[in-house]
Amino acid sequence: MAHSSIIAREGWPYIGIFVLLTIFMTVIWYNFYLLIPLGLAIFSAFFFRNPERNASAEEGLILSPADGKIMEINTVWEDQYLKSSAIQVRIFLSLFNVHINRVPLTGEVEWLARSGSTYLPAYKKEAGSTNVSNYVGIHSSNGKIMVVQITGLVARRLVCWLKLGDQVQRGERLGLIKFGSCTELYLPVSAEILVQPGEKVRGGETIIGQFSN
Image (cartoon, rainbow, N blue to C red):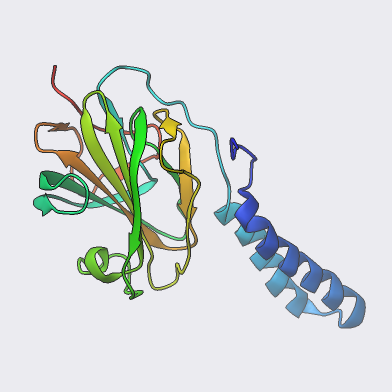
């Protein structure tokens, strides 16, 4: 499934409930309070927006998996999939960012896993190791990378549209996180990083780094 509709299908239940509540209040109890569910319906449509993105086709580039702001770039030991030293790029998504996650580079989905039990605010550093998270390991001709979808204080559900063995293309939609959250990207230490902490990025378009020839 392409998941290319202008609003992600996961958002329609929220939009539908708020629209029905608006209609109910209009018919039964018409007053300015109906602006509350109407506003929530509009915000839900805005939050679950699913824009098209133009991914670069240049070989070796690694694109951002999410919209948001880069919180940190660290060198860490990644023991889940890469099982080696790795560059960790942490991206914070506010409620106003597009929450569709995207594939950073072309390859095969080689590993999927879930872990965690807490729902700490996504901007906290410890959230990456304790919050409910979804891990996507992708093997490419240039090496392995891993994308981690992390829940937050408000975000309580992760959606991943990929399956083991899927052949994925750079910029393809990967899934989404409902409401404020964090996305992490793990790259081999040989990758050249082209962004800095504090920089705003766009999923499927901003170049995070590149593999050397």
